[in-house]
Length: 90
Image 1: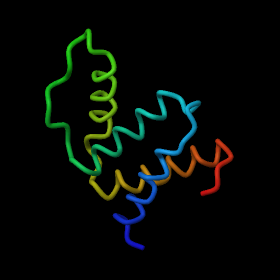
Image 2: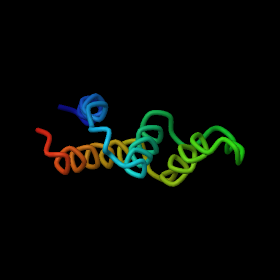
Image 3: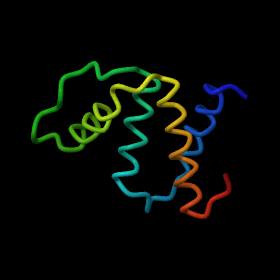
Image 4: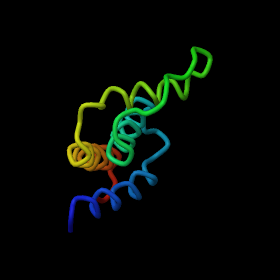
């Protein structure tokens, strides 16, 4: 299985993570996903009052230097780690 196929498989598995998954971990996954699928941040930072979108933008900006393959690999690793912590089958 290629990296892209494995990434897509774990992107689906990420949707099944328990609601107890912390916002911090969800933001890490969001940033890695966007970096892997879109590339570097291509929008301006949301305003102060839009805290949710601002946090998502910051998470994406934090991984801006990673290549798509590197972001995919990190995303897969993070999903596996979170599934393991939640006692889910990988």
